[in-house]
Image 1: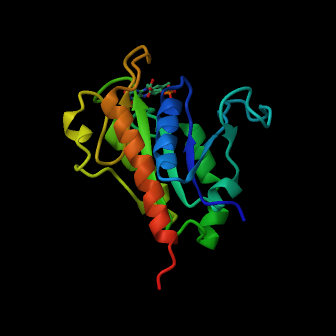
Image 2 (image 1 turned 180 degrees about the horizontal axis):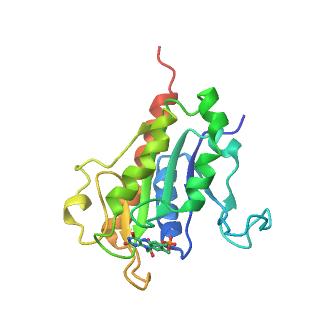
Length: 201
Ligand SMILES: Cc1cc2nc3c(=O)[nH]c(=O)nc-3n(C[C@H](O)[C@H](O)[C@H](O)COP(=O)(O)O)c2cc1C
């Protein structure tokens, strides 16, 4: 059996959500847990289109086993019309076998997103991403207001999870508050997973 890890699973077309995932991974590692970064392939309008099994760059594609065996999950997507992106939803729609066996029940999970506009649906996307995780019986971790960045931010950052305002051209880098909230989620998920794994005497 492998050492416990937090699965940081995301979709990212232009890199903003991917950078958030890397910051969350740093928070996980701060707690001494492994962060397993994984992504999902794009979906195609052509039914028969296939992509190579290993992407040309970046994180590997996630497998059901990555999800099955994780100690916790951080799930990230760009906002698409106030909702998660189709490739991530497509992957989640293929997780019925884990729902049937209840293998994700009781595991901690959190969500993150990036948008081009500041009020363009960060919270609605984060809330929508929580729904399938609740169906799986996962324990949702948001961000508490003891994280000062939640009050100081002039960009992204919500109590429902970290968010990033990438700007109309998608080029705005993560600012210090957005970075700190990404790391806080990673740390919180890892610590919660460790506490849940500790055998109670
Ligand atoms: C089809 C589509 C829909 C989008 N919908 C929204 C939206 O509702 N609100 C918003 O602020 N940005 C929206 N965006 C912009 C992306 O959320 C934004 O560029 C994000 O930072 C991209 O993340 P990525 O760099 O990880 O791909 C949309 C982009 C696309 C392609």
